[in-house]
Image (tube, helix red, strand yellow):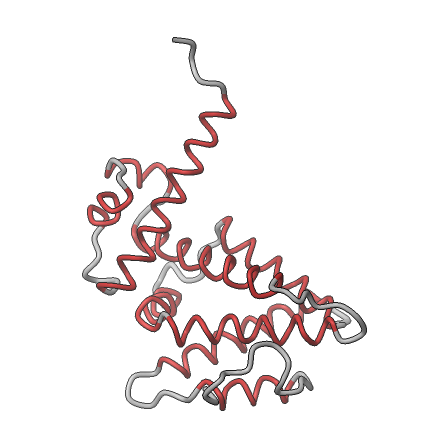
Length: 203
């Protein structure tokens, strides 16, 4: 049997890493961060437990990468959904979709997103990874299409505003409704309520 080519090996590694990220999202969503172990994630992914340390320094880094991947995929799907934004208001529509995608994740995945936000406040803080970089690039492109004079500066501001809105949605005992947070963000950027994906029930 001839040895596998480098490209085949790379694809196998990519799929293995992807399974670990997907398993982390599933388990933290179901059980919470503390109750999810590295062994649980490896078992759900069908991988050897030692393989996780090949890709990630620890559970915190794995979960943060997994959530950033979910955010990136969710944002990309929202931006590309038909009908695709076009015309003079395409930038407004893209920004509205980006806001709705992230706020929607907090609504639909509260356990996972609460664990993610708590992780960002740990000593390791904001971990740079390939998934986070893909998410950042999508948000930069979005604010550039919106018409930002300085996309890098405005991207970091948008990121901070979205993080704050997610925390406000998930604050135990005093959560703010999605509709109120959405209205505040849309007003800040001058976006009509009907842009993006307005909540059917008002949020």
